[in-house]
Image 1 (cartoon, rainbow, N blue to C red):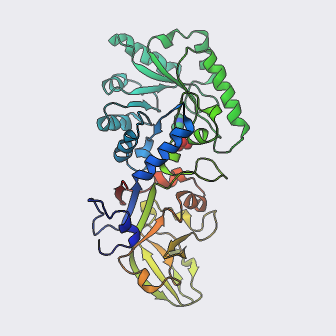
Image 2 (cartoon, protein in one colour; image 1 turned 180 degrees about the vertical axis):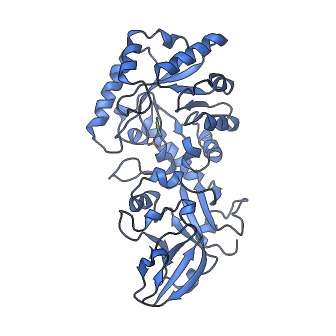
Image 3 (cartoon, protein in one colour; image 1 turned 90 degrees about the vertical axis):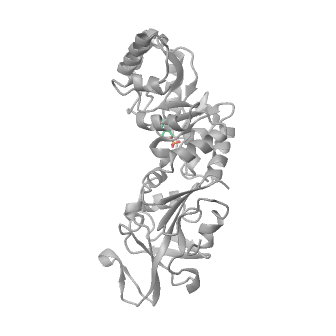
Length: 387
Ligand SMILES: *Cc1c(COP(=O)(O)O)cnc(C)c1O
């Protein structure tokens, strides 16, 4: 482990799969923290069931280790976006329930059936196609029904829902295992849209056959029991992201990014750092260049975006600002205040994690933690730690 700081080694000391000696940047995924977050959500949701949303490769963190860790905690219901993600998850986990949020892709019903996948049916056309497929094989296969209550995205729009309320017989042609809808504004506590969606969901369920119901994402899970129904569907909170704005985040960070220092140099007053010469040094300074850039998902807008100007990481207790523009493969840090032996070529510095959180970075870049996580690039060495 030569060439790595205590930050990188401490968490991997008893791992057999330490990052390779030539790693330039590392995404460390703390699976113990993930499991702890699941337990927090599960107890917040009880007696409702706590499922896990693991679309987009588990929010960029890797579906195989994430699903395995959650299954160990007893999570048995998973949601993914696409049929492809669902097939991959099925190959990893044989006995869990898997819902496909895209719904039923036309012409692919047999594929869902072959892998025991459950489409989240979101239109009359999808219901008809699933019904016809079930009739053709003589089996009532499981599916969820998605009613739109205010997203105007997927789910039965109100005219289609009204038609279904008039004649629900199609719902007897397959096994209706879940009725669900999705909240638009649950990240803002007390937003009246949430209450309107809850009321619309209740009204819809009253006109549909009895089945388990689900409305809450992470924010709905943490925001109060009136949204829990029978099953909650958290995603971002599992991965340590902030679900509810302007309130303390009870979740532990799961994703840590650290980058190798490539060079440290003295820079004289008047010199500039990086593209566009946007940062001018005003006193004798030391600038460290680390191997992490926007090609790795360290967004260019993190510096000079709508947030406060220079995000700071922390090295040996010192606040260290990111300076100049983030480039494709590199980012510069002003390490003038850090003792020289603590930041040298080959050391790793934490660029996202406990001090500079995923949501801090998102705030700087004018985006959300979801986007920061799902853009973390394939060039990062992914390192999974379990304790
Ligand atoms: C992504 C998604 C979730 C999870 O949302 P989070 O805000 O990440 O908790 C739940 N339900 C549906 C339908 C989704 O698309």
